[in-house]
Length: 367
Image 1: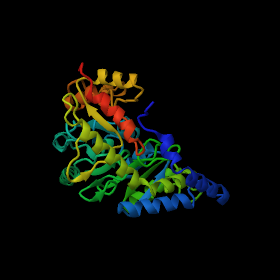
Image 2: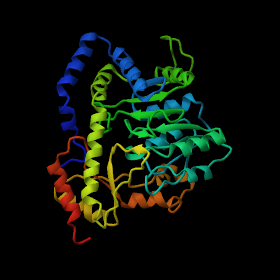
Image 3: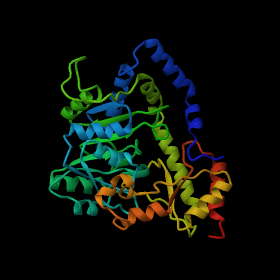
Image 4: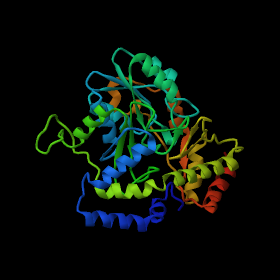
C-alpha cells in the first residue's frame, strides 16, 4: 500500500533524535509547560517574525482561545470558509459567536475576498481565512477589507506551517494565527499539539492565562479558562522536527512539481495551482476531476490510498441546519466537495512510488 501520508517513514527518519529528546525530558523532571515548551515558543516566534508564540494542547484550542482572548463571543459574527475542516467553524460556535460562510476561489480553494466583503454586517467581528492544503490565502486583500471595516484577522494556518506569502511567513500575516501539530501536519508531533502566534502582547498574555484555568498565579483565578497545555515531550519532538521542516516542505514541493510535470496534459485532471507570490507547501495534493469515483477506485485497486477533502461543506452540516443554508448557496465550495480528491503526498514518497501513481492517473482510458 502506498499511503496518503507515510507517518512511520517520516518519524523513523528522526527516530534516534526523538528518542534522545524524550529521554532528556524524562531525566529533566519537568513535564508540562517546562523549558522545552518555552524553547519551542521562542524558536517559532523568531522563525515566523512575530513577538509572541503560545503553545496549547491542539489546533482547535488554538482557535478557541484566540477568539476568546480577542473578546469574540455571543452575538458576534465571524466570516470564514465553508470548505475546510469542521474545527474552524466549531471554534467560532464554541465561543458563542456565529460562523458566517463566504465562498472560495475556484483556483486556490481559499476564501474569495469579494465574497467576504459581501458578507460583512454590523455584527461582524473577525475574518478567519484558512490557508487550505498549505497555500496561503489572499491576505493583502483580506487585510485591506478588515482594516476598512475594523475587523480582526485570525489566520487558520493549521495546514500551512512553513508556507510564505510575498516573502513573509504564514503566521505573521494577521492579528494572530493558529497552528496544529497533529501528526499528519507538515510540522507534527506524536500526538496532539498547537500554537498561537501574534505580535499583540496583551492578547498573548490573555491566551497564556486562558490555557491554564484562567490563572497566572497558582490557585488564584481571574477568569474561567481551559486546560490546554502542550507537554514537554511533544515540545521536544517538535523541536527536532522544526530543524527539518524547511527541508521536508522543500521535498513536498519537489514531489508536487513532479506530479505536475507528468500529469499536466491529462485532460480529465485539474491539478492544484500555486500563485506566483506565495509558496504552497502541499499539506495535501488535491486533484479535481469529473471522474473522481472511477479514479479513486482504480487507485484503490492498485493499493494506493486516496482521500476526499472535504465531502460535505460546513454550511450543509447537520449541526448548522438552523442557519437555513441550502445546497447552491456556495457553488464553488460545493463543486469542489464533489470533484476533489487527494493522492499520496509526504516528504519521503519515492520516485518509483510516484511513478506508479502517475501511471494509473495517466492511463485511465475509460474515463
